[in-house]
Length: 287
Image 1: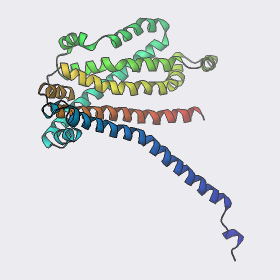
Image 2: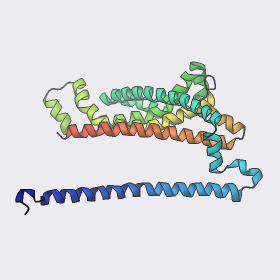
Image 3: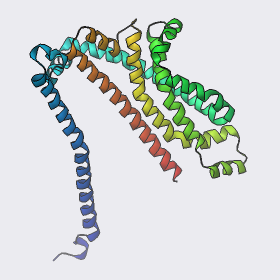
Image 4: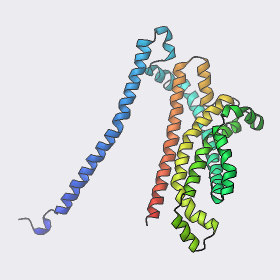
């Protein structure tokens, strides 16, 4: 006969059931999150095959090679893959250098503008001008001032990626609740301590929103710069231009896939770091 102490606890059974239900629910969420992009990808690949083999004649098939040709010639061929990986490394260096500089300068400018309205009115219009000016219009000046190699590419990358950092950081610094400012004022808190203890912690989520946007733009900026500044080691932009000139569409598209992979990787890494820090920020603010 089973003793009372050996009988299974109803609470333990209910807990196991709840955990199992949550796991099944989580699995369904993952499946439904993956199904739409997988279906779209399959449809897109099928469309490429349709255009390549049905719409285009064999003599014009080089305009849009079938996907397996792109993978075989661009990603499975050792020599071509090595060229793309070397170019990927160069573009990554330019992108990360530009993103880092844009983050430092953009954050400092946003902090300055948040401390005085006259500073914001003085600097913000020029940030907008940098954002809306076509980069090709100032390429000659960049070439004269910085040359045609790594430094010039980084400058282009900074100019393209800095604006989201400025705007999002400034928004986060300026949208602190007024009652919190009043509380700091009652305690006689100085401007520097108010910035470090109130405004910057409040702006952390906004800072990473801007940084995530700029992460993708930094890759675009690096590739765009490589179209114009050809000295030094070739990056993905120069490789894309080379394959375009040679009408090597299969290698052009495989290099484009590598560039997309770099942009996605940078976006995901910055987003992951931002989510972790933002989560810590919310947990600390709720204590």
